[in-house]
Length: 315
Image (cartoon, rainbow, N blue to C red; front, side, top):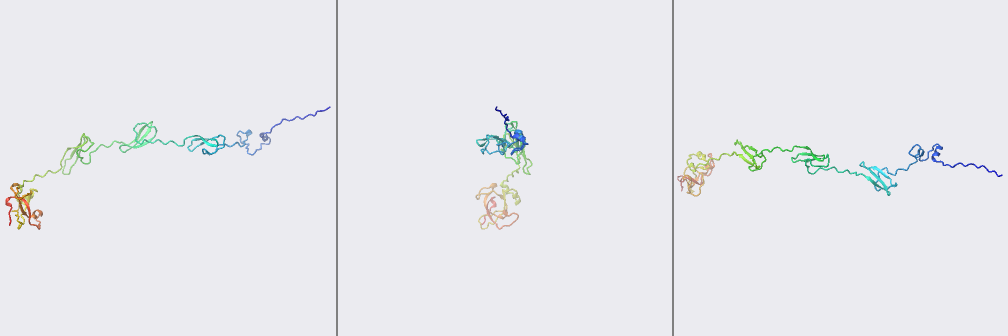
């Protein structure tokens, strides 16, 4: 009889895992693994997770990349976020904010009207007004407002420093101005700015000395007995002294006397006060050198209005 041998029962197969081996082997660390770091790896192992595909530094647009469509975010030089994506082996900017701030609002070239509209709140602008004074404007609540201002009221018009010309323009409508004359003229001249905007003289004071009295009649010259009396009658009279007439054929003045100084033309022409024009010789030194100053000449021929008896002839 055949006897059957009792077969050994085979044990079930099993797989020894790294974790199990580690637990069995006293948690022996494998190269590249840190058993003390827990980042989701089984049983607390960190086994060199693949490195991030985003560069540490922000890449240049268009530069080469190897990641599989990674998306990376950075902060640009203006503190704005910027996103890059690796597309077809090159970095491409996906999202970017403008780094150039808009230019600041500019002031209007011309000084704005007060309370006119504006769209740059808190914008301050400075201008020069019509009085050459600085004036500041500020845009507040959509309208221009005066922030600083110097009073532009000009001083009231004043009288001109010197006497204005009659008919010249003026601004002091209805006002009068007084102007003093020379020291010997105590009363001022008054001018008034009329409604037509021109100056006119309202009180005219003549500071010119009165005209000299009219000259005495030429006949009065013949009555003066001395040179002083003749000179006192004015330029219409002249004191004449006979001159040297010898050998000239012209009569000398008959006698010293005061004669009219009016010029006469032709000999024997009628002169005032019954005198007649005569050509006589007079002493020129008497008139030219007063004060008894002598001169070298002794005879001068001239036409003089003399009485007929005052002319004599000489051989």
